[in-house]
Image 1: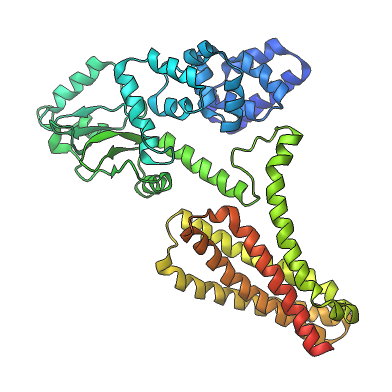
Image 2 (image 1 turned 120 degrees about the vertical axis):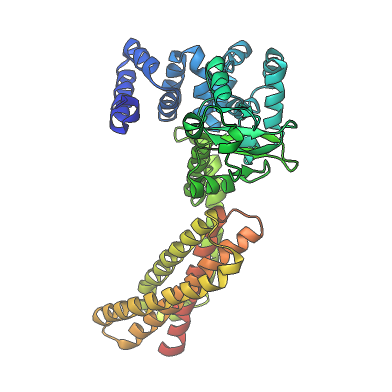
Length: 452
């Protein structure tokens, strides 16, 4: 097995490299960096403080700099690019694949981008413009224009001879595309089919006319869904007129899936998915300040609810002790529902058409969980405070808050999606506000009615 493919071996090598840097063994560290794959170098750079990051970047071979830059997060890549000379940047981007180059060129300084475009031949420049014409998070922005297209009447033998004369195939080619004389997409021929076909038969006879074709404006998350559903390695990108524009390969789809996962996790905490773990104190503070402020406002809303029942709390101190229990249980139950709905939205499983069914299902789950934990909390409360009235009040508040959490957990992500707001970013704060306010109001309101 290739050592680079073994996660345990890779982690050991990266740990050894960090140790060498920490000990000042720069010659040894340089040899280790040279032996790493560009993706591993990028991972190492992202796991180092800025001072050591600058040292490791000096060890990267000039021929590998472009590939390493593509693998880095945007913030770190931008920092490194700002420190590079224009000539060094142009050299780093030579011989890069068009789809990778498109990801990088938008972040280059204007003069460097122009210099890079001038250094490219006309065909490559046109291919790059073809990718840059589409949004980054669309099929057109993901595609690579480096494809092999054939005519349907060419024989398998002629095609194989052509491929041998060509000498190499575009990276991750698993199928060849069939087009007509006007470059309109007709289908695809898997290489496995071509190798086993009758040498004299036209490739059109073994063509898969139902092979997926993706419109260039298709959102990236829909592309990943198609690749997951159909177990694709590559797929053709075809415009409204049927013209073959390029292809999307599985490596680009994996990158999108990874970015979506990072976005979901980081957004739940109000952080950017490109957040640099080793960013400076001031920079990190500034990025987190807004989200903390928003959460403080929601906390004050809950505090205002509690303030309305100050008299009740003064007379029945036990309710103050139990308030965190009700709020916490509602928050956790709501978070479970929100997480499931956001995941369903991302996978295309949840839509307004089936939202009603999901709402009633989650209400049922909330009611059953609420009854079970209401009984448990009620029993604990009787043993703790020795009064069934307080036990009944917290049991009722628990049940109501879990039902509210189920309703809010379904409604909020769907509403945010309808308003074109990222549910992963805003749903958590809204949910917490609702469950805290409803939980406190229910517990203290019932206490006011039955204990005073």
